[in-house]
Figure 1 (cartoon, one colour):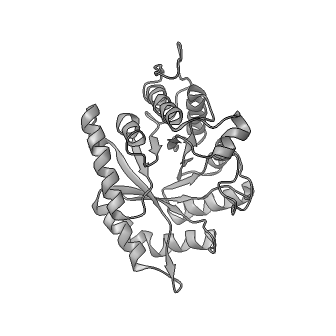
Figure 2 (figure 1 turned 180 degrees about the horizontal axis):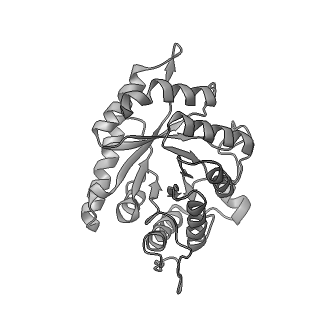
Figure 3 (figure 1 turned 135 degrees about the horizontal axis):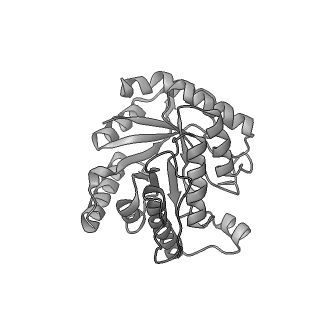
Length: 284
């Protein structure tokens, strides 16, 4: 099993020059993936400032890098028409020469929805949108022709020019056991869930397996991913943090998105030290 590590850096309060510097550093440091958030407002009151728009930021980063994969963690399906999102993703994949991972999610930011779209959809509406979007994206990005979903209708949609990748990986982000993981089982290439313990990781994997059984999907086709925040104690990464990664690997998780931006820490320093001190143990 190939282990992959990604840097996750929200572009809140950061200039494009700062995002470029972090992404180029991640590429040099040997990370496999660089992800950013897809938000229009700050995620929380303590945030450093308002964010850059995600897809135009990714397009810029794609033109400046050569090896590292790029993607949103995750792109809110309520903010763009699904067919348009597929076209945007295809263009970024072309700019990057085939390095895009398309993360999608149902969205949660109430103030953001109300500010830009006038209302905050219900949980059911957002989960319906996620499932419908995932269906269209899978047909559009894997087969080049889009198939309508229950929620969205497309007609004679042919996705040309084609993306560089034969099939752009679709990463379904979220931990909802009834709907989100079901959507990941049906349409995802990667299931990225959020968990606070290895017990919770194991539970999410079990739920995903059950959904795969019910929909006839081969569970082994889906890459398991989760995010983690480095724990530093006394100037060193804690043994508990390293143990968590090891336990997740034993459960089948192979992609970790490392949140390097958190209160009290230097994102650039944590990013560099993780690459120097942690990654070699798992990527040897």
